[in-house]
Length: 322
Length: 293
Ligand SMILES: Nc1nc2c(ncn2[C@@H]2O[C@H](COP(=O)(O)OP(=O)(O)OP(=O)(O)O)[C@@H](O)[C@H]2O)c(=O)[nH]1
Ligand SMILES: Nc1nc2c(ncn2[C@@H]2O[C@H](COP(=O)(O)OP(=O)(O)OP(=O)(O)O)[C@@H](O)[C@H]2O)c(=O)[nH]1
Ligand SMILES: [Mg+2]
Ligand SMILES: [Mg+2]
Image (cartoon, rainbow over all chains, first blue to last red; front, side, top):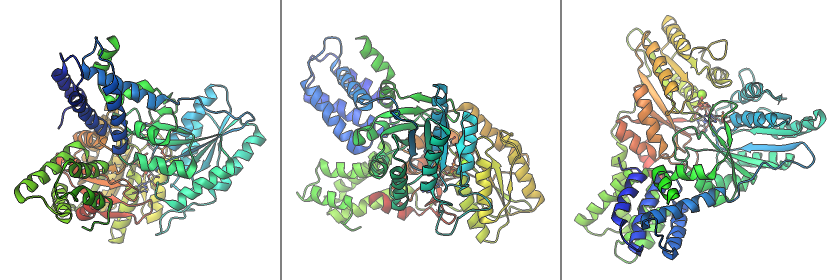
C-alpha cells in the first residue's frame, strides 16, 4: 500500500523546508504528489491534469510567504482553488414564483434518488412547504412501493397512479426490463395533481439510467420537457470513480440538470467526483446526502469537501494558523 | 490489439519519434488510471513494462500494446477458479449470501443468479434478509416471481435480518432445495454497528448450515473506495467471490484488479444490465480488452 497523501506531502515538506524560494522543480515534486493524491481520491484524470496545471501557474507566480514553507504554500493554493471550484456557484433551491415548484431527480442506477426524494421532501416540509412525491420510476422492481414507504417515513403524500414493475404485473422480458405504464404521463399528471390539491413543491423520482442508454436518456429528456421543472437535480454517488465525467456530461446533455446532489457521503470515500463533476459541468453541488434515513440531508459545504478530498486535515490546520 | 482504439492512437503519436519518452508512459498510465485501476496497480504494470523495454529494447506500438495486454492479464489472474457453489452439498442445500454497500446491485444479482440456476433445473429459495430498506423484500419477491422461485420474508418491516436468514436456510433444508440465496441490506463498511449486524447474520446462518459462498457485490462505477469496501467486508464475512455489476455502462471496474490481489478472491460474475439474463461469468480477457479499449 502506498502512503496517504498526508504522509507523502509531509515528506515532501521535509525536503522543501528551509528553502527560501520555490523553485520550479520543487513545485513539480509537490504537484506530482498532489496529482497522485487527487487520483487516489477519484478525481478524474483529465480534471486532475487541468487542475494541477492551474496550480502550477499560480504557484510559480506566488509571492513567497514568510510563515509557510514552499510546500505548504502550494497546498494552500490547492485548497483555495478546490474550495473555489466546489463552491464558486453554491446557491439555494430555486423556488417557482408561482407554485408549485417542480423538482426532477435523475441519475445512475442505485445512486440514491428515491431515498433523496424523501429527504428533500422532509427538509422542505420542515421549512413549512407542502411537498408531494411523484412515482415516475416504473422500471425498477417495486420502485413505486419503495417511494410510497419513503413518503410515509417523510410524512408527505405520494402520487402513484401506476404500479410500475412488481409481482403480478411485471413487464420483465428476456430483453430486459421495460416500464409498466408511461413515466412521462405520470410525471405530468403529478404536477397537475399538485396544482389541484395545492401542494407547493412537486418532487419527481425517476428510474436510474446509464449514461450510454440512449432510449432511457431520451425518456428522461421527455419527462423534463413535459413538466418544465424549476430544478433538475443530478444525484451522484460519492464513491464513483473515473466514470464521473462521462456520466455527468451525459446527464447534462440529456436532462440539463441545474444542480448536483452528492450521496452516501456518510461513507469514507474521498469523493473526488465532486471536483470532477463541478469542473466539467459548472453546475453547483447543492446537497449532501449522508445516510439512509429521512433526516440525513445537509446543504453542501465546499470547504469540508475540499479538505476531505485532500485528506490532510493536519496540514490544513497548520496553514490556517499561519 | 489493433491501433484503432484511443490508446493505440495515443501511443502511435507518442511513439512516432522512435524513442520511448515520458509521454508514452503517461499515455499508458492515464489509460489504466482512467479505468479505476488506481495508483498502485498502475505503477506496478508500468514498471513491469519499463523493465521489459530495458531488457528487450524499445518496442513498436503494436508490441507495446501486446505487452500491456499481457501485463494486465497477468495481474487479473487468468487462472483463478471462478466457479460458483451452486449444487447441493451432501444432504443439504448450498447457501449463498450476497453482501455489499448500498445500491451496488445485490438484489438484482440474486434475481439473475436464481435465473441461471433455475435454467440448470435447480430448486432455488430466496431469503429476504434486507429488512431495513424501503420495499427491499418486495423487490426481491418480485425478482423471485420473475424467475419463478419462492421467497422467504418477514411480514413486517424492521424484523431481525438474522432471524429471516435463519428461517430461509431452514426452509431450504426442510424442502430439500438445491440452493438458498440470501439477500442482505446494503451497508457502508465504515458503519461498525451495521458490519457487526452482518457478522451476526452470518453466525446465525451457520447454526443451520455452513455458508458455501459469500459474494461481495461491487459497482463498476466505484473508484478507489472499492478496495476499502472489500477489506472490511472480508473481515466481517469471509468473501469467496466478487460480482462486478453495471459493466454495461462506461465504467471499467478496474479497482477489482487490486481487490482480487489483496483479498486473493476472484471476480466470479459480472452484471451487464437490469434484465434477468444480464449476468455473465467474469472473463479476464474481455475485461482486459475493455480496460485497454
Ligand atoms: N449510507 C447511505 N445510503 C444511502 C444514501 N442514499 C441512498 N442510500 C442507500 O442506497 C441504496 C440505493 O438508494 P435508492 O434511493 O434506492 O437509489 P436510486 O437512485 O433511487 O436507485 P434506482 O431507482 O434503482 O436507480 C439504498 O440502500 C439506500 O438506502 C446515503 O446518503 N447514505
Ligand atoms: N445497468 C445496470 N443496472 C443494474 C445492474 N445491477 C443492478 N442494477 C440496477 O441498480 C439499481 C440497484 O440495484 P439493487 O439490486 O437494488 O441494488 P442493491 O445492492 O440490492 O441495493 P440496496 O439493497 O439498496 O443496497 C437498480 O436500479 C438495478 O436495476 C447492472 O448490472 N447493470
Ligand atoms: Mg429509485
Ligand atoms: Mg437490495
